[in-house]
Length: 630
Image (cartoon, rainbow, N blue to C red):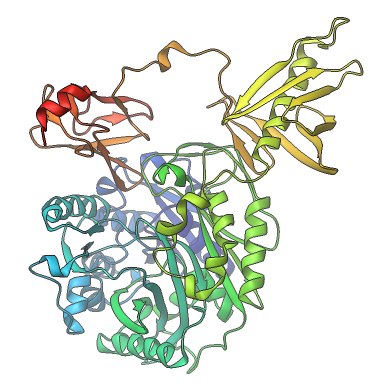
């Protein structure tokens, strides 16, 4: 029997595994990098072992250090979670060689399937060795790992060498393996997968299908089970192929076979030899605990001949600290308050007061609901997200709500991997009610100031006060009875106003806003709206030279374009340097054609958001015409 489990991972998945271990009476051990010293998974574990350093290559990807930590803490088993070393056969062998129980598939199965290139060879599918114009578009893909890292869509053959290099660098940083390959890219297919669970006695469970088509940067955002609207014959084919793949390699444990469904046919993508991020929707539909079953299988116990029968529908939304309207830029800062209404499963690695740093994936939590029907599940999850208290950095919460309520998503024929490419502009429009939230923020601030410095009413009619939040200008003045009159926007009557709660009547409807202001970054939260006030006076430090390229997020400069130097001519859209933040690479490009007049970035340099990286002096129109007379 397993008594103590070390989880060779961090954040949300570590906390989720700890939860099951506590229910089973199994002790837990966490590992942590220096950046994670105060993280929730460290606080929740019975014991924790430090992995000195910050970068994954120094910490979570060091299998030797993880095994040493397990032995030092007295663990008798290791669970890899997902990502990092979860699909590393050498790590699995090192665990068992140390006399520990490996909660995962046999190393041989990992080797056969964890590398996407070898998995395709096993199934008779060859990658593209030579790419021609007829093959476009193609997808450059990391052979190891997942989560959208090390993946690039290529639509021009001339761009292929650079994208191969960038994908390889990103994969090496995230997974410790820079191998990449090229395969055809199928536009606007559905991403469908099959959850497997196998024991060492020959039993293979195929726990239905999941649809994970809503993706950004090849990383899943919304997942659901079962995959809706699949023809019965196609679904049976998916399940049969997944089972055959598992039996072909003698698979044991939890795993997932992924497909791209297009034109009524299923195309094999890969087999993930680990637990998936989206496993909770399968758990909810089948009424099982996949982590508990993983432990049972690792102990040598046999599964029942058949899995439980499925029931209802489950949907999961990944809540990220990112700004979808700014190219999904990851965000950092303090998560001041994080509360979700009851009746919703929340898998998270963060709690109120935790800091969101730059070193890891920006996912804050997964919110999962189960209901009798898909329509009820979508409604329930959207409502829960809308009512969640999220005070801190920008998140994708509004995007998730709009996605779940979008008519195209509600219809299964509109469900495909091109959803965000088609709909992102409409989905990132500020939600209705933001201007009234700005009124609430302004009045809460006014009452707070009045409480500290005395009332603001005078015998002479006072001048209007003006506050602006994210482009919403609010004008108001104090009244004789100690209240406030809103003059802009029109049609707003103040019912009551206090520093933490404001009630407004608009068109006969009274709405309440709970308001909280925070000094780090100056953000104000009014209801579900996050607002940034415009300073009343311009900060001289905000004045930048025209053509300045500022860091869009905190991160590390990993590369500068080969040979780039001050004085070089650059063209609009030309990549100048690459930043790595939260395990993703981000290109910083020239905003216009001109001359590079300053370069402050160097590989390895840590930068904060807004740091000056480079300056491009744009060519005057006459200069551009002289250079390109055509």
